[in-house]
Image (cartoon, rainbow, N blue to C red; front, side, top):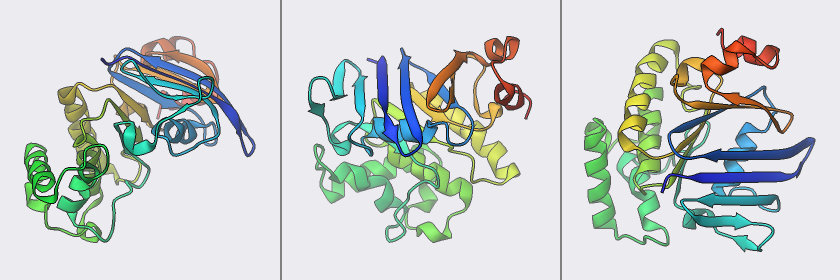
Length: 239
């Protein structure tokens, strides 16, 4: 099931969140000014932030419910998460990074089987030659692909991407953007993506605009462009 929803409320420092997101599949893009709560929403859904008034459901299963007293640990949620900067483990090589999640509960796959599956995925993504390389020897585009592979290997019910292309130079960003779009289209899993660049968003994707912890507009890029709610949206659509 591709349907998911999340309602997140609470005070975090100066940020007062009251956000509801819902999708029946495909890519949902989350945009907004710096400090509007985009990364906080992703981290809350991933289970990296606790203590909020949250109701999170993915594929018919409740992952978190303040009202019902339900809290599922991050590794139990089966969500793929690529944070800003990719979050790769510097002390592990590429193969070990990609296989890492398979060794955690509830999967608890042994080293041989997890490495075999990681090798297969690296080959499918066209980066098999990187398997023995250390993270510090990877280019920006290579890090992005390895991080995506690590998120996809657990067959996530929902994929969370936080500025997946922001750290790349202009040329690498262009080629990696096409790679990312093709992978997201092929894997057919729901995606929640934070971005600052309208070129990262497919025309058919649903876009939600956050400002000061609130949803202020939503729709496709075309719909936002027809009636932008503020100066940020106007600037976002004309990078």
